[in-house]
Amino acid sequence: MGFNCVRLTWPLDLMTNDTLARSGIEPWTKLMVILDNHLTYPGWCCSDNDLDAFFGYPNFDPVIWAKGLGKMATLFRNVTNVIGMSLRNEPRGTRDYPDLWFRFMPKGAEAVHAANPEVLVILSGIDFDTNLSFLRDRFFNVSFTDKLVFEQHWYSFSHEGGAWVKHNSNDICAKIIGEVNHNGGFLLDRGFPLILSEFGTDERGVDVSGNRYMNCLVAWAAEKDLDWAVWALTGDYYLRTGTKHMVETYGVLDATWKNVRNSTYLQKLSGIQHPFRGPGLQEKKLLLHPHTGLCVTNNHSGNVPTLRLELCTKSEPSTFNPKEGILWINKMCVETPDVAGQKVKLGVGTRCSKLGQISATKMHLSFKTSNGLLLCLDVDERDNSIVANPCECLTKDASCDPASQWFKVL
Image (cartoon, rainbow, N blue to C red; front, side, top):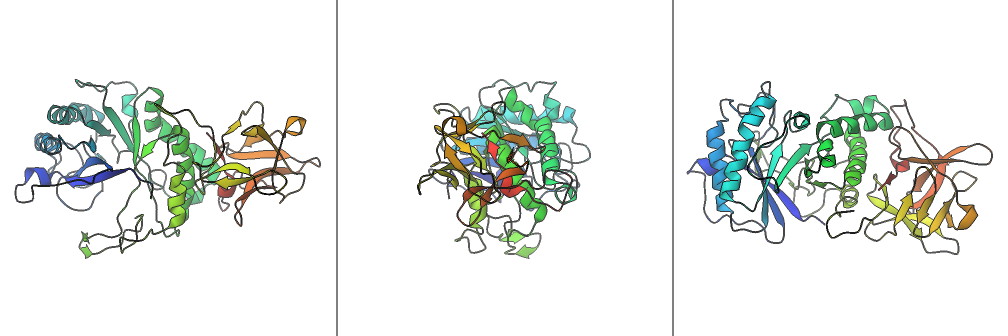
């Protein structure tokens, strides 16, 4: 399915309670593994009033926690594909104070580092790991720096309740991306690695909020070229909150654990499965369609070159300079039609059309026809060709979904 890493959750009790521990634990080969200390005792999480929600709560003793982290790090010290350890999932609660975070997180980090000098040390923020903003003005002091990673979570319900159906998608996407950047995304600008280690939605497609949020998230994750982990692979659970074989509707696999629950959802993720830049890579400039996870490229069939969507790994490079307004696919430029519904062509020279980025997300690529009609690039779902249609859902209207007209310049 294109995944190369598993974020494998484990309870602290597994390392500190000898009646639960088993020897001979072997992770998968070829796949990279991040070991995530999810909670103290085996069970389901998470809520504000959990007894292990934060340091010092009845079931969260920082000393026992650091000891358990050290034992887990030691157990996998020589297993090369265990590449990271997340110290604690979603610190939260009414007392998730930054001062306590700064007091205890370094102790857990040092315990892992002492036991396994090679493994990445991954730190969660507070407020269900949605907030790392306290790192803006205060440095995290540990004896190492070259393997320190931060993680952030983002779900449709992580922010204002019902925001994705109460507000226009362009407006709320731009607003929440601003919040996500303020709360954690800024770390990337300061040179720190940041993993989007949890996101996801109901893959049955019935959650309007989740569907809209996913289009926004994929665009942001692609722009930042983030590493990430989707919740979850799971088809069902042996036991969850007293129910046997409860189905995980957020699961990539269905309840049989054999079939993909939603191939469209998996295709959407494919758009961010491959890096766009980084060590050893040339920066690849693309135009991503977040709704499908595909990229814009030249449709070589037919007499006249037109645009279509294709897997991003197979698409030709594209560039768009907002000041110039010209969209280039390889060495050809976009020629916009003068009538709505027509396919968008590629040409050369003086026939290049000027496009503008409108709406709060800047993901609508628009132009005016000779008679003053405002059109935007859109997708004909019948054949994935790029067409020009009247611009939709630019602002205010909360009932409108602009996903087919969203294109993210990378």
